[in-house]
Image (cartoon, rainbow, N blue to C red; front, side, top):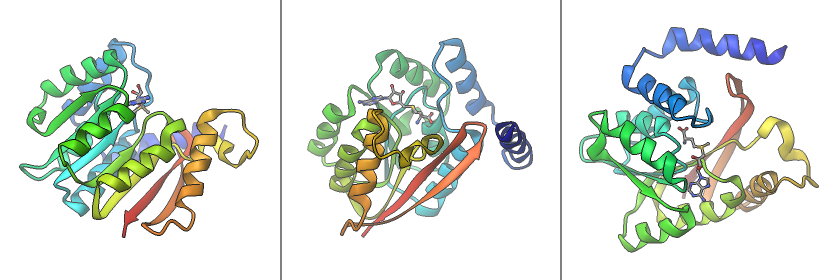
Length: 220
Ligand code: SAM
């Protein structure tokens, strides 16, 4: 019952605050046609990523977990000219869908989709000496601790780190959970706890995508 209210309120907020954007909607439609799971950020969350990007004016964004490129496009729409988002996707079918989706938009020069497991492609970015001002961690939660370490390695001072799905319907407080995703997120919080290099908070969210939350951190 709560979920119905959350979803209806999200519909209301989307109707009020999210201008209809055919490029973003085309991506959701193409993803559905290609049978991609509907695990992209919601429109209000996408708009938050867009607004944070506008606040920070990053030269480069790193996104771990592309899916069909829906959140990538939200980020791209907020980028300054010459700025770029590098987005990492392990699933080659999803990466192909994302490439096609982004090619249909005016942002293809600003979105680089890198196919492969992130732990194998992050070293390539390191070799290329790309540094980031905003990092969005949204892939396999088991690897969140490793992604945080990579994020810190590749981040400029003052960089913003956002990690999605860190509440997971409340399951993160289950210390003995046998779900590796839960343990991944718990280890991620263990790393953040008193980390000398970051200041962070976490916000719980409800809406169309259920009960979840995100971490927001800044690199000192
Ligand atoms: N950020 C996307 C959005 O909001 O539109 C949603 C990303 S979805 C929640 C997570 C994605 O991470 C999936 O597409 C999945 O294939 C990808 N993924 C899972 N394991 C990965 C890995 N080891 N490296 C890179 N991507 C991975």
